[in-house]
Amino acid sequence: MPVKNKVQLITYPDSLGGTLKSLDQALASCFPGLFEGGIHILPPFPSSGDRGFAPLTYLEIDPAFGSWDDIRRLGAQYDILLDLMINHVSARSPFFADFLAKGRASEWADLFITLDKLWEDGNPVQRDIDKMFLRRPRPYSTYRVGSPAVDEKVWTTFGKQDPSEQVDLDWRAPQFRRLIVDFLESFARHGVQIVRLDAVGYLVKKPGTSCFFVEPEILEFMRWIDGMAAPMGITLLPEVHARRAVQDRLSQQGYWTYDFILPYAILEALVIRSPLRLRPYLLSRSARQFTMLDCHDGIPVKPDMDGLYAPEDVRRLVRTCLDRGGNLSLVVSPEHKDPDGFDVHQIRGTYYSLLGCDDDAYIAARAIQFFVPGVPQVYYVGLLAGQNDEEAVSRSGDGREINRHNFSMEEISAAANKDVVRRLDRLIRLRNRHPAFDGEFRVLDSDDSRLRLAWSKGGEDCVLDVDFVSMHSGVECVDAHGHVEHVIL
Image 1 (cartoon, rainbow, N blue to C red):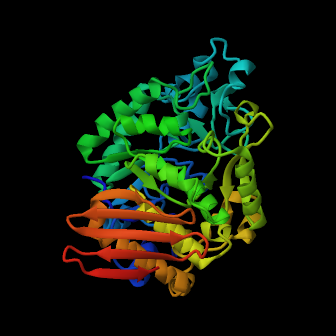
Image 2: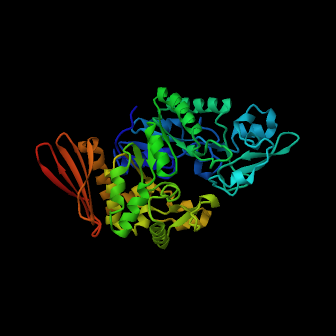
Image 3: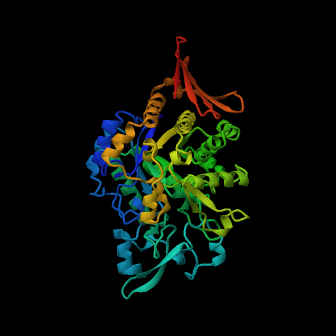
C-alpha cells in the first residue's frame, strides 16, 4: 500500500488521554478526520524502560495501553506506523533471560553480540572503540551468565543503566532473521502499513569503523528486510541520524528517509528572521522523505547538520534555545565532537517554546514544513502547541521529558480551543485536501525577507508566502477556473 501524501500524527500510546482507546476518542472529539496520512504510535509493546524503546516482544500490546483490537480499530480509520527497534531488545526479554540463565547453551545465545564476535579473545580494543559513534561511555555491558555464573561482556549501544536495559542483536544470526519475520508477520496481520526501523544505523558492528551505518553491510541488511516486508504490504522507514550524504544514499536506493535537516533549518530561519540559508536547501533536497519539526527526542544538530551551517551560527541558535528553556543531549565520543569541543547532538524542547511561544512564528514553521515535499508528521505536543514541561524534567532527571507531556482529556479539550491550535488544524486540512500538493513543487523568487513556495497541478495552484520580518503567513489558492482565494494563516 503506498504511503499517503497527507499529514500524520506522532504520539505515544498513552500521551493523549492515557490509552489507545482515549487516543481514538480524543481525535474523534477534538480533531475529527484530521490525520488523513495516519498515526505513528510510538512503541505500545511491553517494555522494561526508555518509554517503550526497550521492548520485551512485538507480539503483544502492553495491557496498560490496550490491545491489538485497539490498534486494528484505529487502523480502520488511519494508516498505522509502528516502530521496530531493529538494533536491540530489552535485557528482560524472554530471549535474553534464557541466555542469562543458560549461557552459551541457550538457543538464543547467538542472537546477542558477545565481544568475542568482534575481538577474538573477547577483550575490547580501545583504539577501535575510540572510532565509534558512542551513545554511552562504553558500548558493552557485563552480565552474570549461565550456571555456574560467569561474567560475559555483551554489546549494548544504548542505555542509561549499567548493565544496560537494552541489549543489541546480531543481524547475522539465524535467530534474528526468524524473529524479524515473526514480528513483521504479526504487524501485517494487525493491519500495520508502515514500520519504522528505529536505530537501524547502529545495527552493524565492525572493528575499525564508527560502527554506524557500516557499508556495504547495512545496505545488504536493508535489501533483505525490504524483501521480507514488501510482500506483506509493509513500507519501511529507516531512522538514521547522519550527515546528509548518508540519507541521500538511502534515498537513491529507493527507501523513504527522514529529513532531519529541516527542523533545525526552519527553526534557525525563524529565529534570525531570514530565509537566506533555508532557501538553498529547499532547492536541493530529496522529495522522498518524511518531514517533522519535533519528536520524542530532540532537534538534530550533530551529526545531521555537520558541514551545512557555520559553527558560530549553530552555537548562536543553541544559546537562544537554552535561553528559551531548552536543554541538550551531547555527543559522547571525543572522535565525533568538533575540534574545538562543540558536542551538541540534539536540542530538546517543544518547538513552540523554542520559537518563543510566538503563535505567528509557529504557524509559519508548520506552513513551511507542510509545503516542503514529503510526508509531514506532527508530534502530539506540537499539535497542541505545548510548552516545555520543566517539572517532568526535574521529576525524572531525563531532559527528553521536556517534550513528552501526557495530556489528560481535559487538557486536550482546552488546548484544542486555543487560537494557535485552531489555526494549525485549518492548515493541516488545507495540506491534506488541496489537489495541488500532488503536483509540481517550486521555490519562487522573492526578496530576502520572504519565502514563497508553490504547488501546481492541472490548473490548480497553491502558493505560500511567509514574511520573516512580520512573521505573517498567507496562502493564495487558484482553481482551474481562475478563482482566487486568499487564506491568512
